[in-house]
Image (tube, rainbow, N blue to C red):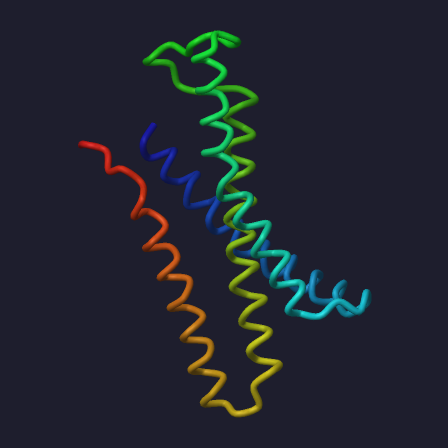
Length: 148
């Protein structure tokens, strides 16, 4: 089961990465057609990324609250989530991955179009990469570490 889950996780990452390029190009074309600036498009994608990142934890907290109040039953401790809820979780996770990849791609495209000097473009693109690595590293600071 572990190898299958790892292979499916890697496939989802590859899928999110490759699909985001097509979506990004279509979003940039649609933004040009509707007279939307690239900055507005980047902001919209970043907001969607934040919402999709917060959605699983928010739903989990909501379900815990409903269980505490007795409105829904408590799950069995050894039961693995299956069915529709697991499918929705995976769908949200893939959508989040696509949005993160889209945000990086759109920011990179924005840097390429705004900067005329190649050296400035390279430094700006490196800073975008460092910014997203910083966000990824700091996003788990507040999360409690689980014991092995």
